[in-house]
Amino acid sequence: MSAGQRRRSIPDLRHLEYFVSVVDEGSFTKAAMKAYVAQSGVSAQIRRLERELGGGDLLDRTGTTVRPTAVGEAVLPYARAALAAVREAQLVIDEMVGLVRGRLVIGSIGSRRVNIAELLAGFHRTYPAVDITLTEADSLSLEERLLTGSMDAAIVSRGRDRPSGLAYQDLVDDEIAGAVCADDSLVGLANIDIDALRDRDIVTLQPGAGTRSRFEAACKKAGFTPRIRFEVSDPAVVAELAAHGLGLAILPASFATSVDALHCFTIGEPPLRAQVALAWRDAPGSPASRALLAYARSVYDQTLIFSLQP
Image 1 (tube, rainbow, N blue to C red):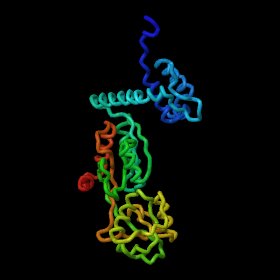
Image 2 (image 1 turned 135 degrees about the vertical axis):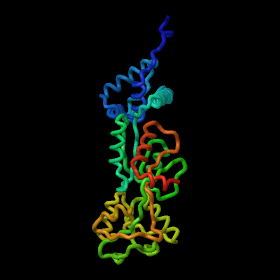
Image 3 (image 1 turned 60 degrees about the vertical axis):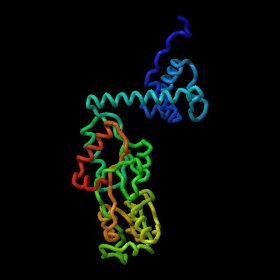
Image 4 (image 1 turned 180 degrees about the horizontal axis):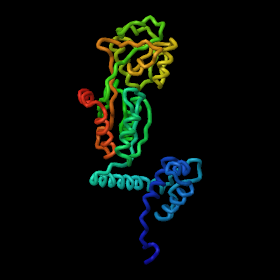
């Protein structure tokens, strides 16, 4: 048998993983750090992959950013497909033997009504083979990541219309509070009409937060646009700005009432409310993601959860 007729060896999956990772990261160093291996090891394995595939360079190593060559571009979709097929096969096997493992990317807003650390700690004790990555952002950003498939589940505040393609399980219900410093004219009131906020400076969370979206929608319905003076990502900073007299804070009541320096009141009748919910992509998920959803339902008050679902 001639050299041209010799059967080529099938590339190792680890070689394909390194190749895809270097392309995605644009760097051997970053790919090595992500895999917790030495950079020289990644380079050597990709060289071996290039030899196994016939000797052509898969990566252009000459620039500051590593990019696939024309050959690499041709190989890349097949490498991704091969890795995806193996992952899918593993999920099928896991389902058949009842094993839950894998990786979950979880997002959360900064809500005090849902103890995300306690939730994930309990889940990890029950399913120790599942690796969890947690990130914090506003509700809109988290929902966008869910829709793209880059996140498995998220704790969000439902203050706007529900995006198509997502499912929600309400966990807790919270009033939206107005909060002012001790010498404000509104101190002593338990509830105010939303029209009373027409000419007030407002301190609130950044666009994308459910509480803010619900408040702005109520203002629009009342015929005015709120005068936002400060918008920040951290509810603690919102509270601090209001406590120093820089505006009227709009916050979840569960958070606002915990700040001693603020006087809090509900807004409107019935009072404005927002739900904190577990959200996920409305499509078949991995065994790990399904296990998380089932665990979350078991942790929170079942009566509240199911009475609030759509």
